[in-house]
Each structure stands twice: as structure tokens, then as C-alpha cells.
Image 1 (cartoon, rainbow, N blue to C red):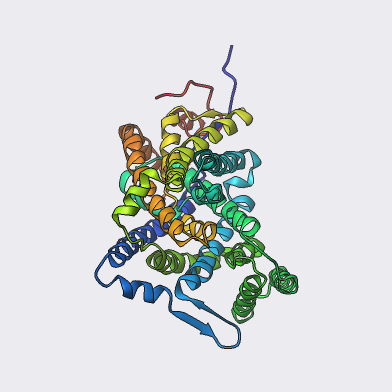
Image 2 (tube, rainbow, N blue to C red; image 1 turned 90 degrees about the vertical axis):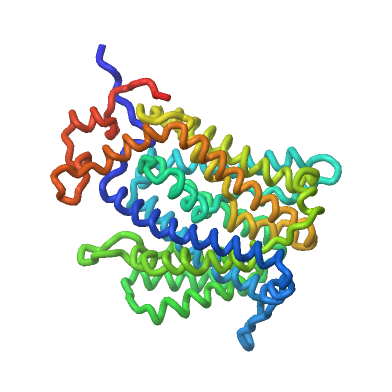
Length: 445
């Protein structure tokens, strides 16, 4: 009896999607390395004899006359991160409208994994903090993944990881970013200035209308986008929401006479700015945690610190791996034969690097308790390092398998610039295990 044809989860990507993912990974990886440098500088500065100058820098107020004044730390958190979330919104829309995830069956995997990868850490945190001395309000801190940091670590420990796994990390992190901003908008908006919110919605509709009319005048979009950001902030909603909203209303489908869509053009311009400037500066201004004997002791005694660490290291790995397993079962797919669930667990551990947005959520969760902000930030930093080390151990166990798959994916014997596997016939694809029509085979590893 012939084997039943099944879909493979984590199967080989299309050539166009592989090229896009490779480009995004290169840009985000370089940004992640800058983020790492900025974090080290911030930590060293905050624990140096001139630590007062670091605090003075963060609290320096920069005002736009007649409109608003924020200190540099808040400008970074609400201004620079808005650019980061704008890029995330553009990437999310591209993935789900014209990318491989436009197929609902393909979208189920990263979406379910991302949702479970946020819910489980929150549950873990709450479980640790339900007793005396705990602060359940900090449940949001461990729910987010830092894509730049995670990809920087991946570039070091998994440079030849199969493209499907790298794309999975990228996709679930983008969905994670969107869900994180939903958490910010819903749970960290104390009061709403409805007139300003209505103005922001109207301006956003005007932005979308200009896109629909194919208006291509940057000098219209820039002030319009800044106005949306201002009125979202003035409405009492965290201003990073404006970035995601603008990304989601930007047109992503190309017209017949276009080489790039507006979303692609904007993403290509903003991603280097986000990765090389916005995120490192944000880290420089927020990651400087003053370490002391009390703060180090608090890492093993404070329910907040333990909840954050357990949520990021354990909750993320369990949530993402479990969510991926559920998604594969729901779609009646099977894990690609060359991969193992330990590979997915390694990606789940990498997603436990919850740096940028986790630091933001720590400040929002404990806005009235500065000491807990520092405790939560310290836990985020320590847990991110631990998650990276554990991911390295797990992924390195099957490095030989990963390298072999990577070499198959990138082999170009005829030297025409197109990997041979994308030109292979059905029999060759089946031999390489790259297609969706592979016969059912038990997962290896």
C-alpha cells in the first residue's frame, strides 16, 4: 500500500522566501551585534565610578516646544522603538499577504507557537508570584522575544542552521512583537484621551487612503506618520502602537509596473536604521542596571526575578515547542524527516532571549516601584544569557546534521547563482526531503 502524501512542517522555503529571509537575517544579525555592544557599554557605565553621568544622560529632558517633553530614556522607549515596531509591522504584513505564510496552513505553525510562547511564560511567572512577596502584575515581562539578540546568537552558534528553522524563529518573533504591542496597548493604558485617539485613527485612515490612491510623495507620509505617533502618545496609548499600525496599513502588494511595493521600499530603508541605531541606542539608555550584592542576592530570592527567569528560560522553550507540536498535529502535518523536536526546542530556548521589549515591559509593569524595575531588568539580562547558553548546547548537539542540510540547500554546482535544490526535479526533491509532497516517514533524531 503506497504511503500517504503529507505536508512537512519546517519544509524547504521557496527561492524568493529564502532570499528574503537571508537578507533580513543579515541585517538583523549585524544589528544584534551592535545591540550586544551597547548593552555591555550600558552595564559597564552604570557600574563604573561615573555612573552618575549615565543617570544624568537617561534623565535629560528633550522637548519639542509647544508639543511635549520627554527624557531621553522615554524618547528611546516610545520614539526609537516605534521605528522598530514599524519594521515589525511591515514584515508581518509582508509575511501574511505575499510571503509563504499567506497560506493559512503555513501560518498556523508560527502563530500558534508564538501565542503559546507568550501564554506559558506568563503562566509560569504568575505561578511563581502567587505567594507572599510576589508581584503577579509583572506577568508581561517574560512574554517577549528579542529578535535582534536572538539572531545575533544564532549567527554565532547556528550559522548553518537549516533555513526553515531560521525562518521559523524570524516569523514567530515577528508575531511575538505584534502580540507584545497588543499587550502594551491593552494592559498598560491607564486612561485614554478619546479626542486624540480619534484624530490618530483619522490620520491613519488618511495614510491608508494615500496608499490606496497610489500617492508616492514621501513629504506627505513623513509628517503624517509623525502626527499619528504624536496623537497616539497624546491619547495615553504607548506610542510604539503607532509604528505597528502604520506598518499594517502600508501597501505590500506590487503593482504590475513596480519593482518593489511601498512596504518593501520602506522596510529596506528603515531596517538598517532600526537595527543599527534605534535598538542599540534604546539598549544603551535602558540596559544599564546597577549591580550590587543586594541585587545579585535578589536574583535567587525575589519572586519577581525568579518568575521572570523561569518564564523566559522554561516558559518560552516549553510554550514554543509545545505550540509547534500542537500546530503540526492540527494541520495534520509531520515534522520534516531530517529535523528533530530537539531542534525546535533549541529555537524555543533562543526565543527566551527577551531583551528589548522585556526591558520596556519591566518599566511599564513596575512604573511606581523603581527597585522592582531594576530587579526585573537584572533577571531579564541573566535569563537571556542563560537561554542563549542552553540554546547553544541543544543546537550544537545536532550540528553535523544541520551543516549537511545547509550544504544541500546552498549547493550550486552549475554556478548560476541559484541553489541546485530549487532547480531539482520531483525525484531529486524527494531525495533531499525538501518538498511538501514527501512520503510519510518517521522523524529522525
